[in-house]
Image 1: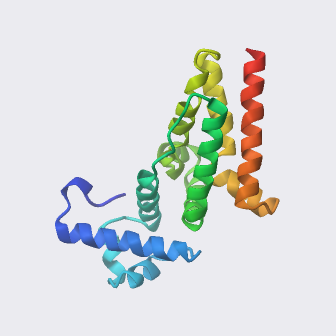
Image 2: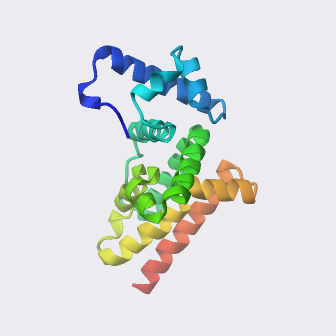
Image 3: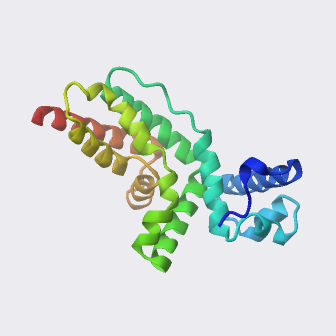
Length: 202
């Protein structure tokens, strides 16, 4: 549970929250999974400081992920759906790699939450719901509107979502040893196949 109203924070509390967030991001950039103590130490605060903002460490990580995702500016979309998706994958995997440790930690926490509380909690409170991939992919596929019915485009968005995100990066990097460039090339190839198959069936 978040213990503050972000729209009504005092300047001092806002600065403290920003310092805590920046400290966490710095440690994640160093490919660490920082503890609350490490984060507060990096920010030069007492260990209890985080507890005045968040009821749990996972809530803080969720907040940090939300700030990072909220800062993303997706590439402009054109009139070719395949090119839109390819550009989105190139851009998106670049952003994920910049924040890979944070995204992996968020995924780990989400999985732990699922184990602890079951599927219903995962659905209602998952950090992955903060993802912007659904909206981005929907926009990327908009040029297909004259050729494909909405239901088919929605199914494409769901399938392409499997190719685009931290989960896919973890599988392809850890299981198959792919680099970011290889991941982008493979997922772009898969996206083209899905789009072309959908058009062929239509």
